[in-house]
Amino acid sequence: MQPSLLFGNTGHCSSRLIFGAAALGNMSQENADATLAVVSRRGINHIDTAACYGASEQRLAPWLTSKRDEIFLATKTGEREGSAARAELERSLERMGVDSVDLIQLHNLVEADEWEQAFAPNGAVASLFSAREEGLCRHIGITGHGQHSAAMHLRSLSRANFASVLLPYNHMQLEDGGYASDVEKLLKVCSERNVAVQTIKALARRRWSKGDQQHFSWYEPIDDIEIATRSIHFVLANPQLFLNTSSDARLLELTCDAAESFKGMGPDPKQLANDRLTHSMAPIFDSPAPR
Image (cartoon, rainbow, N blue to C red):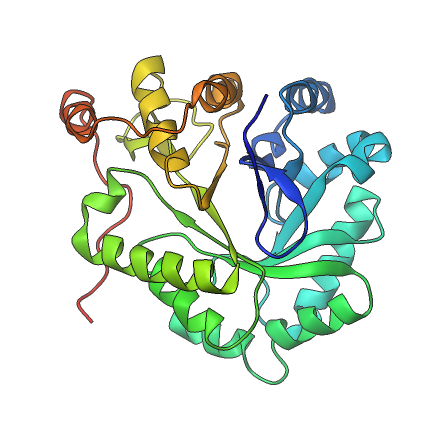
């Protein structure tokens, strides 16, 4: 069975693995159906998609006809202006064939100018909170990529009562002291306010090299089973965190196996350091500028 945890203050007891439905974006419906069958079989009850994930929302629609009441459904909008964000949410509902989502997230809200636009009186934040009052969504969250994400999430949480945050979290990236400090501060605030914390890039090995062939994720993933398992256990060892699965669906069963094998203890830091060395791991995001 998958480990589970209350998803912040939403009332949903979520599997700690959240299916990253970006994996469905470029699939045929047949392959998407097969992947979602794995999601069901492995006990994942939380789906995370986005308007910009190719055909992901459309691929989810047939499965949702019978599974909607069993899962927590999240999507995202990249729009910053209020009416555009509302329109994108409505299109997402139509594509998935649902009346509402459990969570709508402002996608990658980390750039200062976009943040100001989103929080303006006519911006996406106010619009999505209005949509919540109308029943189009139950909760609102924020997501971020890159080394600015934790610091920007703290700024966002100072302005609105978001239900969840999402950010990169892996043992390679946390070797950056500045980022690790920002993450620690964010986790403290989220714990105090019962905000759910989703993590991405658990299996990021390094950026792709030029000339590498077909990609199913924008980073080169860890595919060694033992090293991948330790990387996943590193995330799950923090009882506050959820782990979003990779957009490379070939890693889904491996990730489920690793989560199910987790016994509550994180890996030895010396093993992780050796993994970083022997597997040529490198940060996939640049360090933030000095503040």
